[in-house]
Length: 348
Image (cartoon, rainbow, N blue to C red; front, side, top):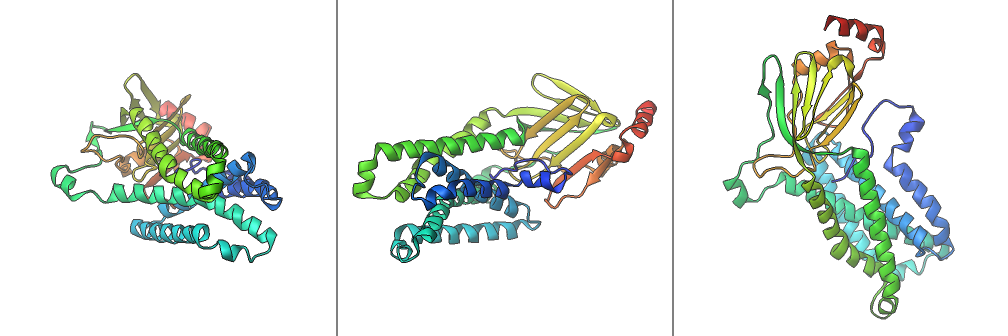
């Protein structure tokens, strides 16, 4: 549900900062705040900046809960924050106007900016919670008929292979597609507010309209987006042999020797389940967690075996630690980048 903006790699701190959703949320807030302080917060540019900044905050929180080692602790924290945030937002919109009027004008402007950004942020948190609940808890009527299993490894001595369904798309492309969807939805909301300006003044408020817009338009739009992604799902087979890996798609077969691999990211569970591989002039990204799978198959990958990991390490790669559960990251060992890997390649 929520999506990682970029895969975790070793970078200087200042480059890591540019990959943090909260950093860009702060930039959006800093750019939009002057308009709110001048009473022009509902103009198109600050309005869109606020929506994107709020969504990035929700995005960062969902990512944080998904990274908690104990899954149910993450679900519990996610649920508590979702409920509290929704109740607080409801109070501010429907019951807190009299209290806000007692505050200084500049403080009211800042709180209004926060309130407008909270609407897409809380909405995204709830979408993430619904996604987690539906993936963890199945309906009793369906569980009695259908048992869903994760794809498993098949022995192909001297290696293994797995067949799964995935989206041939990078996480970065998917993230920018979602950002574009938020901007497009925000622009549509702004145009509708202009078109129904007299109606809003007579029967309601702009804030109420945005909430209604989120429920009646943004939520179906999100599921339509997931449906479109589902139709792009294709079947793939990944094989790990003694000295090379092979990725088979419906129209292509790619073989990469282990000594040519530069990076491999393998995440077996959650909405972020995926395989990313770079090496041998190939760059592939297969998203599994958001793919449409058969009714009997979970959108997951089996964990990499210790034998496969050891073969990759013997080919000059090193395993990087990760705080996220179910993630295996292997990159080229800097000490083996040149001469050592050349010797390994000669031996193989």
